[in-house]
Length: 256
Image (cartoon, rainbow, N blue to C red; front, side):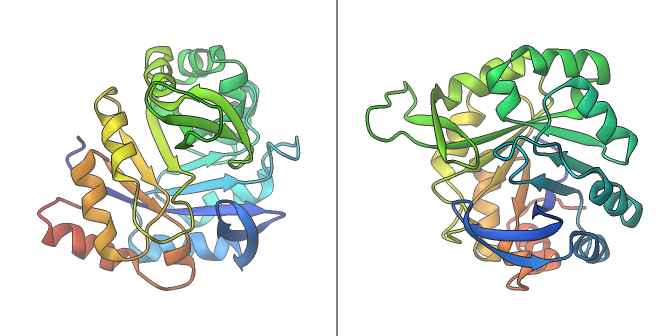
């Protein structure tokens, strides 16, 4: 586990605006991404994650201009994902200010993308974003967790635990583990899922999906996460980054 726990606000962006919904549906406006990024930097965010939530489903590239303007405002690591399909896409994002790049759908369609990106830019650049949920209907995975794409709208039938292990072997440097069941519910992180992934991989895990209050964060670290990510509670002022860090300190964890 990392020496210091990272607290990461996530900006889900659609058409140049930060949006948030429940289970990636019924999206509502949450502000300007550049303004929010600057505010989170002032609050003491350790990193920032920028996800273009409709880039893959709309079959378009991430908005380079918004990424560039965001990168100019902050001096902490910036991870960008959404619509990344090739090493050339990664190169473009790094050139406009991203420090790390998240891949999801394209890596599922072609797992060699992970190794090609890692070999060209280094493992530390590649974050595998995993939108996982408990299996439904006729899907039967060994772990009970399946990978989804298109913001949770499309089932893949791929076992989420198998997938993170494979991604680590291929060169992923970090796992952004988002619980689609918990996303936007503010009922707490999916601790069972975090524990299941932690047992199988050595690379850092960023826990995502479900944070509703400061007290929700320490259990995610106890379950095995190295970093915690949230969106809604930060965007709407329900909890500040400082309050989350205070809660983590009270639980005995080192924060920056």
